[in-house]
Figure 1 (cartoon, rainbow, N blue to C red):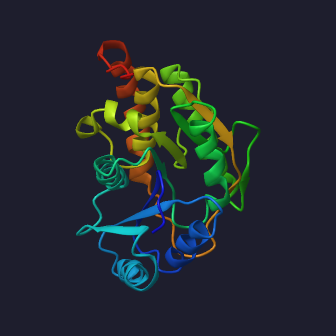
Figure 2 (cartoon, one colour; figure 1 turned 60 degrees about the vertical axis):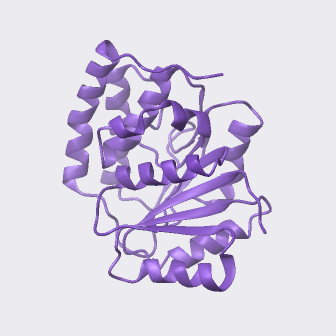
Length: 249
């Protein structure tokens, strides 16, 4: 039995080229992590690959939630958060399946929370310059200026507001009303960070290098960016008028 206080949540849709490799990479780390895959009915058989690995090798540390159809990144993570809270994991991670987030950075995010006392650790592309590899320049500029836009509108001093590589202490996700999270796509990442900040949690940005996927297809779309553009204004209004819960000791 591989016991762990940490669970890495990986949402998937058509990631057959990456999913087995990313799972094995996490399980070869010296530190023990469990993995929860949230698969949105991938027609390419991603879920079947995960189930084979559960049945043949990793049944005590690999888990899967299968959903019917593409229901959105945000709802996938919320399903994973609730599953992880019920099972009392102390540290709950968000991570992509495509190796844009390096598994070797997981212990660094863990240490920021477990050893340094932060409540949320963000794998940040922009805290020490622009650390992005193999992205088209247009995509780099869009991402970088999106974070600047969020900071300008909300006053939220996080350099990489759209980052999707994170470690939460469980109490953060127990404090936030997950059923009230509004956004499903790109803006979900912004909303979760902003809400944690407004609740008073301590946040640290840990510098990481983001590497563009080599296999599979990106799931980004214009609609996702549109949601983020208008969603940030709604978050600013919430910040003025909404009462946020405070952390419990």
